[in-house]
Length: 496
Image 1 (cartoon, rainbow, N blue to C red):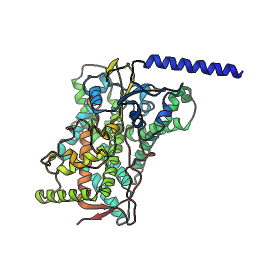
Image 2 (cartoon, one colour):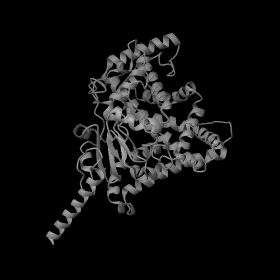
Image 3 (tube, rainbow, N blue to C red):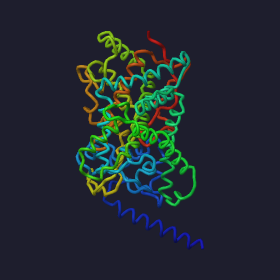
Image 4 (cartoon, helix red, strand yellow):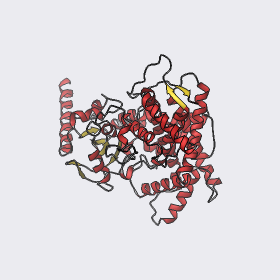
């Protein structure tokens, strides 16, 4: 009996390795996968950035085998730009299997939906809606200032006691996004805000467990906490965003834009009028675009602001330079400048970019090959998931000398002017090509408005006797796309 089991296990393992070798023989090198579970054990060594440490051993482009299928990881800016900018739509897919379980929750959105005519149509609707809603940078900044007011009000209730920037920013930004979507202002402790935060927390925890379900598919038919979490996220989605969309459908008046949901409806009607194709989806896709705003926008922006406060505490000299620049700009203009003119506050703009880089905020973004291609001299088969290891690029010594040092001057030219977000090839915070972040303009505005307003009002310091916060990211708060700092507290002292 024992011999039969041993022989069976040997044959299964041999068959697995032979099959794996045949499939991957022309693909990039990588660790040898285990039967059934593939390279999961190799990724578990670093829960924050599971792809980063493997690049040190296997190079700038390497392969993995996971229950979802083959994965190729690229870790240099040149390969990333070749993958996203030099190949039309070759690497624009997102299969339901690779993105599991997010398509069950986010549906026909822009973040996880597969590349198609309907996807391109939704992306046009999204960009058009953002334009209609903002009507230019000035109005978008004005809308963003309410979130700052909410954060200031919360900070004032806690002063002079220490507070956690992470908690304040998360609640304030969700409250602001909810107002953008619905025209309704709610306090930071409103049940709606708590539900949105719970929705985000639920999504963060799903990817780790989903790997097990991909390895053992029949588990999906059994009752489990994983299935309950998916249903809970779907219920929050339907109770809040789908219900809000239904209300807006019933009360929408053409030409009258109350909020971003009205903008989505207006943009859909305009774009749909231009289309003769039938495979572009339907107006029922709008709640999923609302989800992209609510979750993706809040998650990345609140994480960015938490990192901003952390680096201000750690680098008082840079905070002093920003105070001087802010005071000078206010004296010259009579008010805080707009983000539309980077010449007004180049050091602030450069500091924001450097925080996005040095924090390693953006971990990865990934798409599937929609046809066989060659990348970096290796074969990439159709359906393979190609992961762009952005965190590795942002912390690569070859791209950024003294990569672990916080130096906003990297984003200034010799005359001290801000060089922009796209000048340096190794800086890719919003992705590239067809799959780049469609809401990046609003994200930049939100970040600039928060940072400039709060830093003009306050000096950010450590509490008496407090330890300097670490730049090591939090393992418990890491998502598949972004990392947050570990919990820390600061004191906000009024400057005037």
